[in-house]
Image 1 (cartoon, one colour):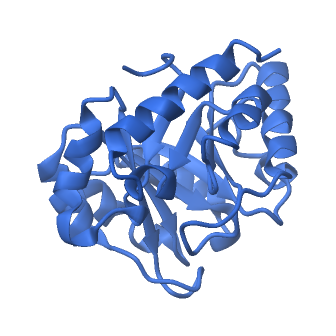
Image 2 (cartoon, rainbow, N blue to C red; image 1 turned 30 degrees about the vertical axis):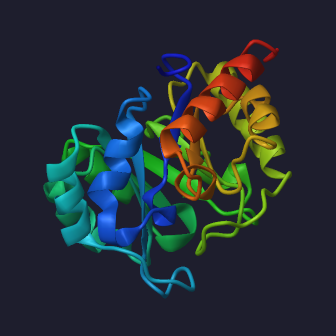
Length: 229
């Protein structure tokens, strides 16, 4: 079962077998996860191409879990409506990918989805200052986006802690999501820093038993939560 009402493991299908995505999702459903993370890449904003609207629509038919769609694409405003109609529940866009982040966030909300703003390792938290009151989540990239299986960037912990402090000081409600290099070895400091949602791909779907891998991450996250100041 899930570790905490606001502490979630979000398995990322980027690391799953694309020929059997429905089976991959079903393999983790019984663990109590509530989000499936879906990375969308365009080969321009990031140096890789992944999946698009038709795959999200197919996933929507395969699961009742929330689809957490992470748009790593240029000019995301052009596609927000299509992904929402395909069945996304959460849509996150990158601060670096649009000149009008507040407009993109508003567009996501107008589609009835929860809205997120993401920042790459080289982007400071301060660039999100004007939208923190409008987003449902902030996604901190703990690797440079584009490929799964990268090593965790420790500087992300500082950003997570900064966002947590801004949230407390401002009485804000956004969740803090972390994506990249989340493993049994890195999850504890991320949770202690203040993360609420932890995206895990390789450390789940590259294991022989994905459900057991999720449950182990849930256990470790729960233990770390007890140590959060």
